[in-house]
Image (cartoon, rainbow, N blue to C red; front, top):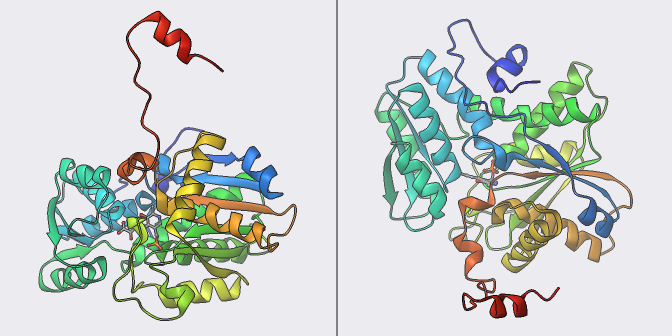
Length: 349
Ligand code: AN7
């Protein structure tokens, strides 16, 4: 099957009219990889939904394509968002594709280099706000209210609607839902969208049960695990450095109706998981995306991971987005003289 993009593939399931522009950068239809080595280690059937292979390198494209198409349909003069990075890259790209100006508000100094480069190069007007993501989002909401701009954060219902496609693709490919679906949680939109996607498929009879949904946060930014908002969230997984998730209620409901759970892991556990995923399976995901693997390893160590279940882990963002998170923590390449003798000595297996 050729890639057609989310709007064409799921036309019937999305709130499209004949006036909605069929925008596409060929997002979605990402691979569902079997992670055999890590799966064996954990004693489960482990699959990864490799959403870092989307056009801008993250799952955000699934919802952004619909949000921007709807903004065009509704005559918005510009789009605006706040972002820890990936939303801004996606908004900027789809804004460019749609020919509509894009404003992005980033927490100053807290966005991974790849994401910042994307937003700038795709031609967005990028503003670095002195403050954290939660403050930037308040300002973006104000901007949308004060100007004729469409807010394309996940408060925009079309974003979450488009992100349901992740759940649909998994069910379409497996012909049944997995036992568990585990994903990182920041602003809590994606876990809510997955839940809605699975519930919709159950409603129309494509599946007969919901997977248990597990949302993973970083210890320093874990409002949903702790049960209260965090004023100064801290984690090196900057994508999920969020203290006041706007979709907290929806996410709590998602975990409740599917009998799932919120979990948290330390930054060190995230980095260990990132390395295990890369060196064990050949898959490079950004730190936030590795929080679920870290959580699975932790559950295994605690004897709380059921044997033999099928688990889909959503790899939400590409590792290339944020090389700085790892480059200072791994040994640098060994330097050798440009001679055969030096090389020969280094080629010991
Ligand atoms: C790689 O880009 O919030 O719980 O502004 O980039 O739906 O927020 C990114 C979030 C997980 C969390 N993984 O998803 C933004 C932003 C990656 C992310 C999340 C994000 P939500």
